[in-house]
Length: 514
View 1 (cartoon, helix red, strand yellow):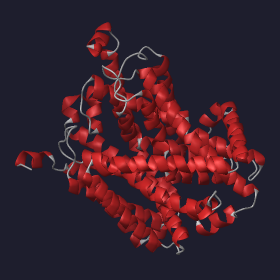
View 2: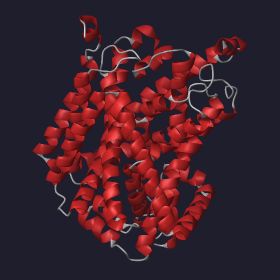
View 3: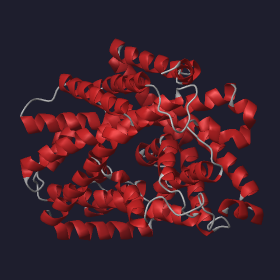
View 4: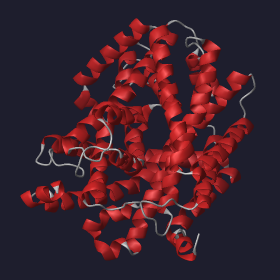
């Protein structure tokens, strides 16, 4: 590589160094006093969700309103670029449908359902039939149209930049140029925007890794007949980190694509086996009733904050989910945009929400219903295992009752390991891109940069896992999501200013179709 190329791939210290300091300080604090660190994170979670919970809720509602505006409004027939779509419709729908294919979704589908069943909303008595209905209904709500509409709006914003404005966007600050102007975007404010995005991405990735590392470790322990310890968690993380580092170093068009395709096929095979050989009638009946309950109570669930009884349910789950999705809005929006060249605004919006919702609901409907069947038939003492050994052990115990028992656990072990590798490498790749000083859309960030962030995320996850609680994982997400509200709002306002100028005239339509 010649000197100009080396200079172009240098890291940006204002974006690269602050996250390193933050991760290092947090990990050292956990090692120094894990009990105080856990208590501090618990207090921070309560403060953020109670203080800013209504902000997260209203922001999500506003984004859903914008989604409806794009579906039915004056820009519905505008296209994200000229010419024919890059992918045929079936393939395109499939690529969005399979964003949910992974063992991480299986964990949430299993354990969130039980937590809702154990501590239901609206003062419902735990472990009753009514609680069971609310358990799956809330899962479908949290992983349904409201969530995917958020990603859709930002997918449109980046699709417009990529294919209409012909801009190469590797940093969120670039997407704010219409609002901030060229000077501020290339100055200190642009650095702040990128740095805040970086922190949000760290929080979202830490949630995924922190929730799934114990699951993968527990699956390894169960499959190979060994005891799950923090040492095993560390071993999993180390091998994961090396594995991810090798993949991201190899680039986007080699190991990543092959691994992703394998993950999707394996995920679909698992859900079909459970649906066909599991309690099919019970699964379909439970799913159907839960969908009906969701439709009847959609607005009640959307605006539920429980300020009077203060049960904490909406803060623990709904606000946490909206915060988590906020941290991942920009990278997921970029992914949806990249595969949607040539689609109309309405086509993109409807397909993204419909296909992604269907993919999520398929997993949640099957695995949450299976969990309820296990509970009703006393196949596993779920509550006892949860209290004694944690959610990862409870999940694996429930999965141990799946058809083909030990074979299925081995398959889930492979799926869990690969799934997290393919999910995390996308975040690591984004971190490397944003922390590089100059990068075109045709270049990849330096290999050492990608490897570094895979190691850094592994260390951060080990610190979170060592606290042996789920709350710290949630807390990292909601804290880093607060500045993301401001960042994503700036991107959104810039997008609306651009399309008002470009798409609100007949000249804009003529230029687009040239």
